[in-house]
Amino acid sequence: MSMRKNVNSHPGRIFSDRRWILPFLASLLISITLFMASVFGLYSSSYGGDQLQFDIISIGKSEDSDGYFVESDLKRSFDTDGVSKKEVPRLAYLISGTKGDSQRMMRTLQAVYHPRNHYILHMDLEAPPRERLNLTMSVKNDPTFREVENVRVMEQSNLVTYKGPTMIACTLQAIAILLKESLNWDWFINLSASDYPLLTQDDLLHVFSNMSRNLNFIEHTQIHGWKLNQRAKPIIIDPGLYLSKKSNLALTTQRRSLPSSFKLFTGSAWVMLTRSFVEYCIWGMG
Image (cartoon, rainbow, N blue to C red; front, side, top):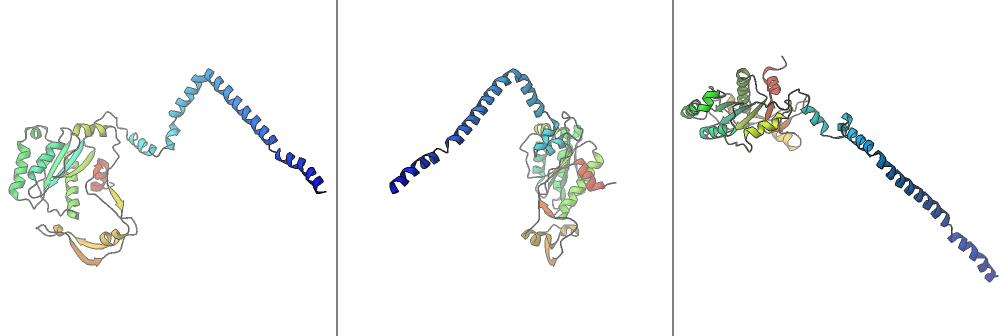
């Protein structure tokens, strides 16, 4: 009996081992069909090669194709101000200095000078009157500056505490003078006496010829974490607002609450701003 049972079970095991044949044949037939279809499709496309190339070019030039890229918003901003790409912009510079910076201010001025631009120099009240006078005479005696008449020295010397509000107040005053006396410039740049350019003005103007006049360059980051407690909440007083002698910022023991209607940001005081932006800062909406 055991021998017969083993003999009878042997054909079933052979049949079960051959179950894979039908799926294999089916998948093989499908693979051959797909392969033949792809081969015939490849050869037939050679007759319509021009049409295929036209479709690719059409997709590449499609107006909607830019929407897939993050840079499309920046690219569109370059073309929305109506300024010709060949029009060379004009820059307005503020060069600031303090005691002992007169020669370095002249060095920076000569390095960034271009006849198309406008320049205003400010030496703060810490510098002695003789040094401020020497700076003024150096500008007046330069034949190029005298001929083009695009360099001026601020007559009023302000007491500036760097990193304080008096620095911003002095910058706004210089911008107001530039807006009043020069009507044809596109960007405002503030520099210190220790700055020196890495590009020539010709190269810089060429680069900005193809850029939108609506772009501002501001380094900033939102204040959060420890900066809120150490920079936003303490009350800091700038002595330059009410004293005639320069001194450091004064940190009081009192603290203030954070504003709820807007967020606070921190960043560099050295910026490149559009004319429309600084017009809003000086004149407002009206």
